[in-house]
Image (cartoon, rainbow, N blue to C red):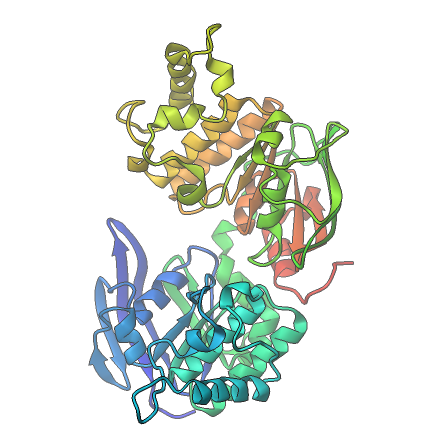
Length: 503
């Protein structure tokens, strides 16, 4: 590698309101270098790559491209400067074909000014052939599996002459064979002198494909080193930090109670494969898995949002045949979704209306009308108990902070009075103070006999509150942790370990 960087960040800081999420970050990457960017969720990785891509403007600091100070005004400006990002949620247009997506904005025209479709088809097909990628170039992208869409996104970056490609968890939905194709694409990018920033939770991939590694924690850049000069234990220790390990709030070492929910042989397309487990009444049961592990889909399946291809789910020894979430509620199962704003709240309704919307039948009078006085009394009890900060019960829920919205959704599940509460990413996108409030609420619920199933990517979160933790990898059960095994360091090492079932 040479002495001249393609991109350099100098003392970059970023604040959102009073929250400082990046603190004087200094970073540089050279042409042809593959840099791993590591850190726990919330470490500042996403903010940093969005500044590089032009999505966010830094609060302070300077950006240099080829040692010339520059400003990246917006994502289009970033693309024009040779910076391309492949996010976890791909930004392809599903209704367009593979070729149309790849050449969007850079269409090739013939001498008559018409689209040269033959030439564009030829270029895409030649690239796919060179990578041993079997994708119909005329298929609509929305009809392709996620792994194929990932390959299309990389091909798009190549054809747009990217000089820096940022990949955010690119392997999350790939098989081993597809991962090898990804590696081949990255090696070809290196040969073209394209710099790559590679974000992943899987350390084996860092050692397989990356030259260097940068570690962020709490918005601070802790270290940049050659991958060969840093061992796995050191990486993990830097990522999680000594001060956040082994902090348990739920002090139960063992928990014995009758089984209330059983899942047996659950299969779903390519996402879940023969998943089986049992949950005890009054237990806090964690389901841990990275994006693509099938954990989020499993939570939705337990609530009837999606349906398994095979297997059965029992609640209190009764086999459930759930066609929709209403069937889950009938069987005393409620759910708090991971996408709070998209699928959880009704933004135009009041906080009180949101809280009672799944339990209206519990609050109607003998004439079938909603008893507003009864609703208000029940909801205000949870407002006081959970410390939900609202101007009034009539306030539209969209004006609440994320933490208060989440507390209101948990209050909704308790007003529904179900035996089982499923929470998908229970503290996603909320501040630290509200996280601990929610942890305390969930532990109190369990003490009162409610069964909590928490689906999360956050190891720290599950270690703090769970009686047992089930880890999924690639749609399969990897291991179930209980007792002294519920250790952040142990589980983090296992999460980042080689693929395959733990012995």
